[in-house]
Length: 466
Image 1 (cartoon, rainbow, N blue to C red):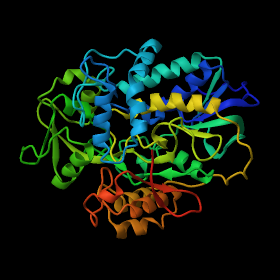
Image 2: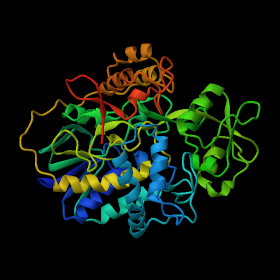
Image 3: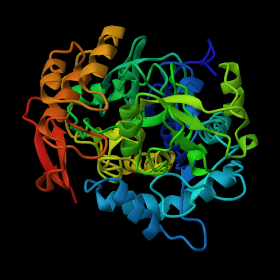
Image 4: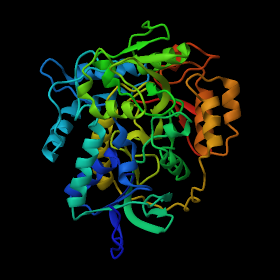
């Protein structure tokens, strides 16, 4: 996958994309189809990105009895009064077309539709059971490698964004007329996470240093069913098919398909939580069952222990509906971006869909957008390490349940993104969706529709978005 030794970068690209997950690859293929010369940069190997670990499916209103309006209604309900409804309309109305595009590229979705938490009907498409993210990503990678207009370069860590000029990496400068940031989220800032180790929000920190606004960093979704003692995710698709959550006495204690924040807190409150897979057709999920067997569990014989783990970040770099950030020449898409589409709590299986819809839009926006009219001083290179101590600090002070005193302590973190997270969480003096404060345990109606926005050198503000 890496760039051959005798191959040189182009002198200048039309578009540089930082990140090689589904959002980044969608942007690359879209731009190449429009005639652009594209480079995709990733700090590790392509297979190490979070998209490969996405076990859930892709939500889309493709059933005759369903509609984008119904999908939008469920998305807004899950977002707990914080969804940007214009973004939700774009997501849900464009979803069927993005599914058909994947089919044309060679993705083979399984028969039937799945049901997951927060959905009012079956509308989730899967590939090979819980292999959806991996299969989609593999298809997009294959198509990108076939394109003579796309260079994919692994092992190239970006250390500074210079919109209008390109970006700097650890090994040199990449010239590009526009940049699309698709670096994923920051759930690996927590000690217990379902994410790959590299999902620490570097792209969001880079964008903030380059002058972009960030928003809603306090909203982090904890998945309720990670295998106890590890970050291995047991997909929500299992509960959608009938798997049950039991306490230590074998009793159900929560609606398994309630919003994830509700289920995750219920799991944490129990201390001991077990996922009973005996009621479902386990043969539909061969990779999950094999992994459990490798870990020493026999799901046919009894329930397996689970715990909540940091899973998905709703916050990120502020963008409009075409991926445009507040830093001219810089665009963002996927989990690193914040369009407001997820609100305070992402609806299950809207994440891969977000990558497809807004990855495409960001590429088209970047190619159509005007070049920056002025060049700003280059930001300093990002030189921060996410240590085990940082992860423990974030876990302790900004976990599933947090409070003002702990967040104040997190404001002293050596990591920029951890400090921004703490500032955002302190500003939201309520509990809503993926943000639960023990000292403000209820929703504040006055904060409905208000997004927590931070800009370099300015005070935190709560904004309404249209």
